Length: 296
Ligand code: SAM
Picture (spheres, rainbow, N blue to C red):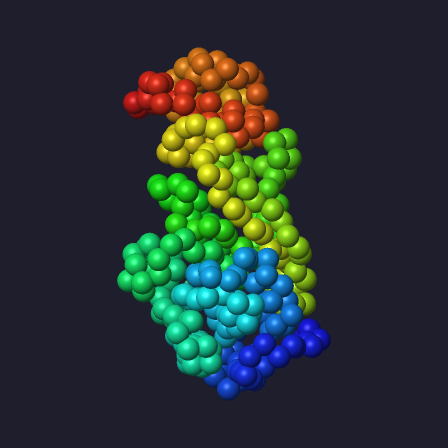
């Protein structure tokens, strides 16, 4: 159990008491590792700012540690989506302590169309997103938020907890072990930064690995021109066989992969992990004009 020296952030009981009162024993199936230290959740909330005059979208509030911190640090409004119905009563108590500032939505964040939800709730303008999520859901949501058609997107920033190893993939540079599809997708049209590590001891129950808080800010426009579909196609093919030369790995896209790579101005003997984001964009533009795969 972490030593917790909780500051007074609101008139609500300590999170440990909230969990006991509502019977919120952590469920492994929902990836529940709760943060009970309000000093830490306030640090995450500040990292997700600026908070004043800002609407936050929080996914997976659980018993409400980060939610309470966002509200205490001055978020104008928090829209929180939670899948575990057991948490809703505890969240309603937070809403009652902050009238008109917390909307609780019961549901699966992976299935929610955020712009529609925000319009229904009358939340005008861009929102900032903050979440401490189960790792599999976190990655899926990140991809969902990075692959929206409209750019700049409906979100102004993402501040998310990830397994340290996943965080490293988001910021990885070419020729490193962690560099892959997620690095290219993230860095193509946003700037990602690892802010700080969070020890397993900070969570209840503690996960097996170290976590890290990552901040992602959208770029006004992509780093290099190409379509999202084209970029996804070339990164999937190239990193699908990351140890092979491009002239081989890109055969999944076109019979004459060597010509494709040359058309992009790249070396056909290079491997995926050596290419920059701009190189992948060049490949995506080249593939748009390439003949399709050879039929079986
Ligand atoms: N934010 C809380 C904290 O920091 O203590 C809880 C974090 S816990 C790691 C993840 C939370 O996400 C749990 O409350 C879980 O029920 C919720 N969750 C898991 N999958 C979800 C989904 N698909 N949509 C919404 N919430 C989800």
